[in-house]
Image 1 (cartoon, rainbow, N blue to C red):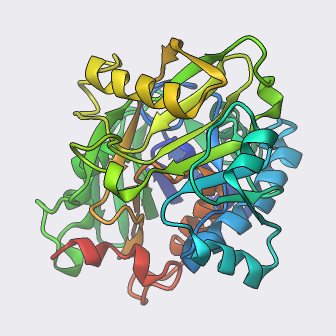
Image 2 (image 1 turned 180 degrees about the horizontal axis):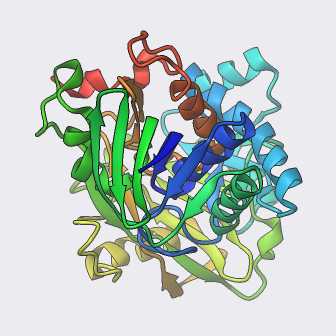
Length: 389
């Protein structure tokens, strides 16, 4: 059995970011990933994820601002281009004056635009209500490169990165946590559990009854197979490099199950693939080991109808669906917490990727705390106990 400081279970963006940050701190870390490099089985693959700072909650705005600098550090260390700032626009109803106030308080550049002025500037989009433009704090993250960079730099700093290494059990034992995997047996001082939709396969046993959570404890998360799509530009539309990232919250009387639009929309350019557009969190509930990877026809038709009305710069019939997963908590807030020696990162609810390196820092902080000490590395918004009742 190999003794190490930290075993990170899960090599998606959050686990890989944690391994990077732990390695930067000189910790003896092993990253165990069930699948091979660049796999598409979870939520961390592909060429684009939205980066934005349009959050009114200070906890998220703190992390988004921190992540911007850390993405640049990762680029410098890895030599890869990961974050592209394009500017971003958010529109719809209600008007988000809370976000504008948070921006003003932190001196984040922004402006309000009339929808006609916004449409003149970005003719590939149609706008509803006042448009919040963040010119220098929004864009896209290249997901595949991000994960590759985290793992490569972590490895260069001494971390052991093991692919094709399924974990079979995580069990607290006196003096540590025993992790059994295809890569061997490990005794770790701390474990970071960052396995996305598979979290409940391990959580109860990993907590080992600590903090009143028995071996059968599960987080109340829902795993869905989401299906955004890449749409091709119409003739005469602005080029891919001229598109901002965008979010749209349709009018409340049109938004929600059974109404015109089932959810808020988002999008961004994916160079070489078109404009990625998706509806947030409307996918089919799934088992992450039994996904079809196929677009559900009725949901795809709704997305095409949305694109036809609100994204006139693309062809709603010329598309390639994308398949990924969400693991969503009831309140769509993350779980970033520690129980004894086990650090839990879960429930990123379809809006976590942009925060990747900042989440890695939080997880490294939690893995540096004494097992019996109060949790100090993450705030109550992200506490596991809020979901345990």
